[in-house]
Amino acid sequence: MFATTMMKRLTLLKYAILACIACSIVISTSAQSTPGSKEPAWVKQTGARKFPSAKKRFPVNQYGAKPDAQTLNTKAIQAAIDACANAGGGMVTFMPGSYVTGALFLKSNVQLQLDKGVELLGSQNFDDYPEIDTRIAGIEMKWPAALINVIGATNTAVTGEGSINARGKFCWDKYWAMRKEYEAKGLRWIVDYDAKRVRTILVQNASDVTIKGITVKNAGFWTVQLLYSSYVTVNGVVIRNNEDGKGPSTDGVDVDSSTWVLIENCDIDCNDDNFCLKAGRDWDGLRVNKPTEYVVVRNCMAGKGAGLLTLGSETSGGIHHVYATNLHGKGTSNGLLIKSALTRGGTIEDIHFCNTQMDSVGTAFSFTMNWNPAYSYSKLPDGYSSDSLPKHWKILLTKVEPIEKGFPHFKEVYVSDIKAVGVKKVVNAAGIKESLLQNFLFNNVNVQGNTAGTIDFGEGWRFEHVSIVGADGKQLQVSNSEDMKL
Image 1: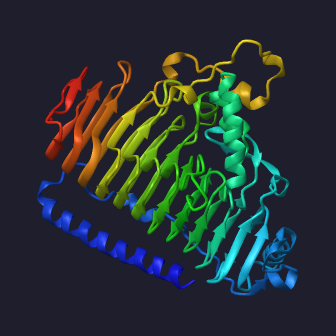
Image 2: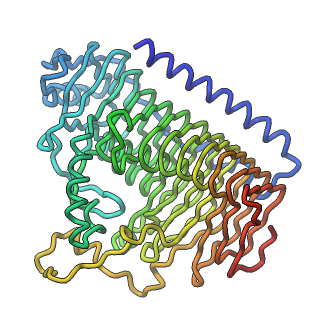
């Protein structure tokens, strides 16, 4: 307990140090600011607009919950949540201890309070997570409910200094066994959807939701998914998904076709994208056509993971108006990663990535429209009859027509006040002939790496006060591009 408290205090100290660094950068470069480097006016409108105000307590122990790390407490905890909601709202609380539970469903005006010394342990039985209608990796389909679900609710919160250990290894083992089998059959593209796993926190079709202060560990799949929701705050959340091994697809926070979202003071160590913005995949994502927009990510840290800030690969509904500032990434595979595929479609625009420090990342800036082809493109092998396929297989196999509708577009990306050391590759940027990477503005960027990298199919890029140093001595290689001032 002491160690956990000290970890959180040290994390807050790191935020303060980073804030001071960021302020000094802004002051020193204010005379050199370029369009896109200033905080947009809409930033102040993000996040939950209200918080549950009722203070009446509904202790789960009075409804039969036992903190013995063995008893399945799903029904008892849900009974306390329901009673709280029926009374008009309040706080659902726990005596100290460890509570095993399956899927819980929060309701409007309810605050789930996990105080210091309280631990929720995810059930390791798939039967304790009933399937619901939701969206996974850009496709609407049936999937197990999360451990904690906020669906169709408003004015709801999950708070406290306690923790949630999803104990997700049972999901990881399922995935790796299925992937080995599926890859041998030429089905790499569908295994992620057939290997149904458990998310830790799902906010879906909800508004004015706050998730604050908790520590979340060992997600079976995505840790926090914000889906079709608005005015959500994720503040001071610590995510540690690599304690029991390296689980696949254990994203940190996924903002999925949601708006007016504020993510701040979070500390993530996971095995996939740390902070990730999504908006639907291929034909189904274009059908739904819901963007992710007006999102702030600030004063956050990321350790291991695929990307400090990732946009995509699900981009079909578009991702607009993103402001990411005062971030720190150490050991992530990428810094700013924008990825899509040639069947996704959607426009990525007005993206601000600023006041950020990176250390020992793979690629500082990675922009690709043809990401992970083995996963991104669906093809049915010989020997399968389309008539007998599951619904979600048919969705993924539905072609985007005309083909041009599947081409994504990246434009108006503003990168400013960045320092990075120990980078393997500084820039890996690849548009396509039919869709150039347009109007990327870099200002006051200082990156040291093994190699400077490449830009292919760019247009209207501008570098001001940029230092890109490759240890191999090669300059940044630019091809198939126009109106580039680097």
